[in-house]
Image 1: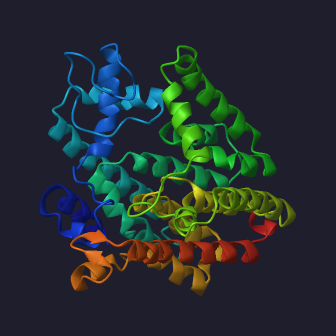
Image 2: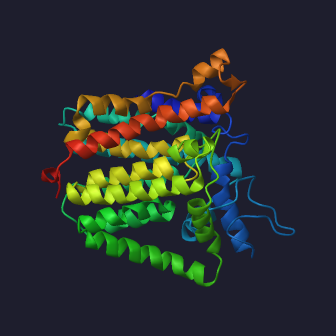
Length: 380
């Protein structure tokens, strides 16, 4: 599994072997457009432009990339030092850093749980999730979010410390997904984590909101929640499938509200532990947030790896089988090979539905398993 994970980086930088397993729309026309949005935003802001990274007169962007949507503080913190490197060098070193961090976390996990009988399977899940290649290929920043979640999950297994808030705010600064964790932290009375995390998040955000340079960040978040646009071929959510099947927006919105309230109720009624609650809210995001690409499923890596070591609900046979489905590629490589539900390396809309179901159905079943096999006796 170590060699497979290493080959993800070799393929992304050199051979592109694993590109075959993903349709266009997941593998973009231009490698690195996700990565370059952050240095673009930092460069334009330092030259008097916007943090979104659009070019201004007489000043070129750092490199061709998407419009920046990352947190203003994160954009400057990460994007500013990248200006010292050429775009290709920065991209290559970013992937090297990605690999070093991920192998360090795997080593840390092994050192902490090496006597656990499930440690080998945990490392397989941590290093081998197939969507990880897509994240590496795109030069995404999502692995930083996953690293913060890794430490937040370890913190959830023990008595609360002030340092737990640092993992919480780190995840928020990369991506605001962790705002969904607030109900879980309240129900488990993790007041130090909430106070420190939200306070630091507010401090690092308020300046950019007051001078309006960071309004793009809030506007993008509100737009993604209120006006979903994701669909084939790149978005992997239940919400996207429902909208593709012409389910009215009112009904899909109502579904999200009912499911969210259901998570709160079940968490309270069954007194689910913090780990399980965080897993359910992460599932909610993967199933219902607007722009969830397949690489976002790498967020399951720390949950599945740590969960199989510490959570009885994820140590059952069915949970292990379902977890291992994320080590597999979607059936697209067969579509690609046989040109069934595919045209060249593009997937048809019907084929896209099959690929999405391949990712979301195991997650939905896992949610059922962890809810009805978890009890508060495992919680702190």
